[in-house]
Length: 311
Length: 298
Image (cartoon, rainbow over all chains, first blue to last red; front, side, top):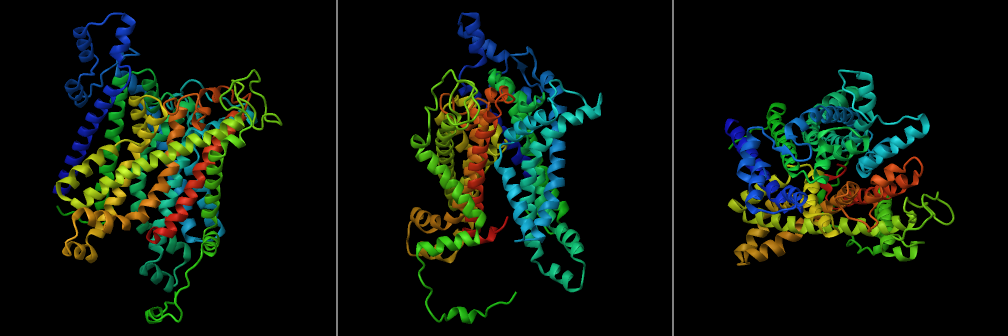
């Protein structure tokens, strides 16, 4: 077990190192580096000054990685502030949105997945499968736009332009977050429902379930207690991975709902060619994803004692 | 469940009849109504892309002074803020979606599949390095990686295809590698080697064809994702640039701005994306059920 943990940590480290390299190269490839913009606006070009500026802005590779490890995320060219200063107030927004969306998706995905499996081939199974596939098919930003459109038409509701902190006004905050969270959560709930359904179907075929039926257990008990317990492992895995991957869905949703989160900031930064920020934000997201995966893998052993990790 | 004794299967009374295309097709429709519906949607999408010239009623990129006209006899789905006919744009948009979707999926699946085949068959250090590289590529959410790639390469049709295929490749590599690892241990592979068949030939002729089922399943599954990724990238202004009528692009800033005045600008392009992806997803599910029974219903 211990060697396994060490090995996994090493792999995570290698992955993140590789990611930092990849991001660095990509940002170098990007047309119109920030220094270009500065120099264009300044109107003169001196290679030495330019290199100095690159080092200053953290585009210089060696320094960037060191800085990143120390938690210094470089300086935003656009805001002329340390990147972390710009990112920090945005983190709670994205975090709250992600947690709410994940909550929705689990609350919707797991029960519907179980019902769908228990009623396999029935009408309710078909309906649920179509609804979940529709969730996987609709771009979340479009769903969000349609929801806003409908609300404005029917109730005159307009998405708030300013962010309200939950500590200032919880109700206003929830009113602001509920819809974007649902729009993002729908997609994840569809994934969770599908995996719940398929693992439930597998488990329901097993002998101990037949035994439970045979000894006259009530149907609900068999499905929701006996079967769901053993089907939960892949579901938990997916939930862990989805949580990190939710960020992808947040990018567009935060843009549509005008929420000042981290994901939207990434788009802003790309559009303003604020590449140190892009580089650092992408790296931050990679760290979150890699550690979410690691946590899920380690949770495996704890959740399922049958799994033993050798070398 | 009643099981048929295997001996009865071993001695069939008549040889199984070779079915023609017709009955097999109808059997698929009856067994997979959802898959058939998906197939229909995909055919419609293909039809729209192939016959866009015939189906379109106006030039999709020519602007006119008749801006934000509501859907009606002249403009079936209305016009946008630049006076372009939305129906024609949606029809031509199917070409962009399908081209980017298919090209990026195929490119990603081929490159990824090749990596998976080599890393699974050769094993050892090659496998280890390939696996770590795939880890790195998968350490970012799909859209984030595609976004960063698109930003680095600059917005163009080709670059959008490249950005999305890079995201798909590691997934294809994983799938093919997993099947190769299982197939490599089969006795027939060993006997082919014993007969003196070269490694390249074993890998390409004896192993590769057997990974085809999961591979097709993966390709159809990723096609919908690729179409969605293109839509999201174009929506954010980092995908297919103007003047190409891309569905995602149609939904971006302009549509959001005029949404209240002209809701059709929001409704129809999004509906087109959703139906296209829904169709490929339904078809993908049905194909998986048919080609890969182990994964049935997941």
